[in-house]
Image 1 (tube, rainbow, N blue to C red):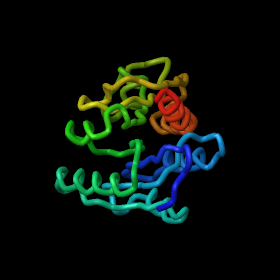
Image 2: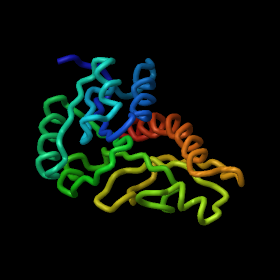
Image 3: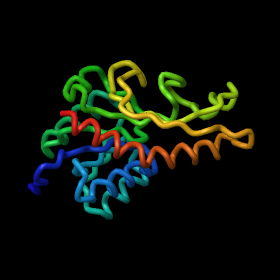
Image 4: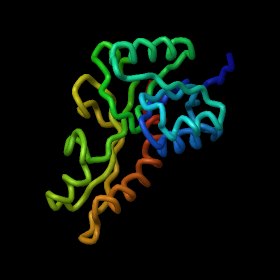
Length: 192
């Protein structure tokens, strides 16, 4: 098995396009990066991010999520097989069990499109606009068994303009997510 001296081995869990996956892979290819993406797992067999991982010859797997326990057990086997040190959830639209999370204590990160603790869960952009917030943003946080409640590692805000709608706000936040996530991983890894 290929080794990456001095770099932590990361698995990325996705459900969709994989735009954050792309930014993480791009960052991981820099000499100064503290991590290497060795595995991509998706609950969605049609996730675009899987094609991207295949193109770059990163091992990737589609695991059916009809049964959460089976999904988690199969994922854990793959994580062990590939000597994964840490997991990054990047647009992964499922909730992991307490038992699964306990296998990687403090080493599962998630990116969330709001300024946590505000707007946990879904429809964050709609909620920020509806409440006439002046700012929205993105947060990278540790995953715990409570939804979007783990310690925030890094957060960045963007101004919500009067002209913003859900799509324009989503695009603005996605742009900062791509810069924020690799930084947050490096911060966490350098503190270990």
